[in-house]
Image (cartoon, rainbow, N blue to C red; front, top):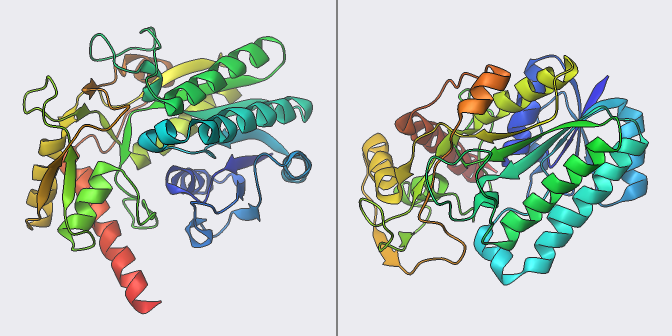
Length: 330
C-alpha cells in the first residue's frame, strides 16, 4: 500500500516524506509548489504537481498510488496573513480539506493524518494547555484548522475512516543529516528568521511586542524539532494501522522559550551578534502557548530525540548555511 502526502514539497511535509522513505514506505507527493520546492521532495518519492482542491486529480492520484493513508500538510500557515486575508485561509485550509476528506472516504482510504495547530486554543487561560482545554482561536488560521478537525470527527463517525489530528506548537530545526529544512526565504518562523539575520541574510530581527505578561515581556512558545514532529506523525500512522482509535494530540515538549531566549540561543550557537529591533504586537499572537504533551507520550509511546533549544538552533543554522551555498552555486 502507498501513502499520499499533500504539501510534501514544503517544510514539514518534506521531512515527513524523508521519515516515510526511511521506513520503507511508498510515497506520492501532491503539491502545487506555491510555497514548496520541487528539489525539496526527496529522491524515492513520486511528485505530482497539482492542487489538492482538484477532485479529478486527487482521485486519480489516490487510486494510482493505492493509498491506504493520507498525510495532509497542504494549506496556508501564516497567522498575521490570515487576519488580513481570512477568506483565503478558509478556502485553502477548510474548503479544500473538506473535499480531500470526502474523496478519501469515497476511495476507501483507511487512515488520515491531519496537520493541525495549537492556534486552535487561542489565548489559553493557563499553560501548559491540554487537548481538553477550551478551544477559542483568535485568528482565522486557527479557526480554519479547528473547522477541519470538526469535519474529520464527524466524517469518521459516519464512515470507516480513522484519523489523527496533531496540534503542532512551534516547529523548528532541520533534518539532522542536512537533507532538508525550512527553505522559504521570507518565512516567519522565529528561529529561521533569527538564523538568517545572524548569517547576514536579513538586516535585522524584529521582536513583535515586549509588553506581554511574561518574564521578559516577549511571547513564549513551545518549540518542537521538525524531525521529532515527523516521527510523531509516523508513530500516529502505526497506531492507526494497529487498530488504534482516532485521536487529537498535542505535539510539543511541554516547556516554553521566550523570543529573547531564542535570540540568545542563536547568538550563542552561531557565535555571532545581530541587530534586533522592537516593534508592536502582531494581531493573533497569544502571550504564551505551551503544550501539555502527556497524551502523545502515553498514547503513541512517543519519545523525542531533540528536545533542546540549542540543538534545534544548531540544525537550523546548518541548513541556512547550506541554502546560502546552494544559492551561490546555482
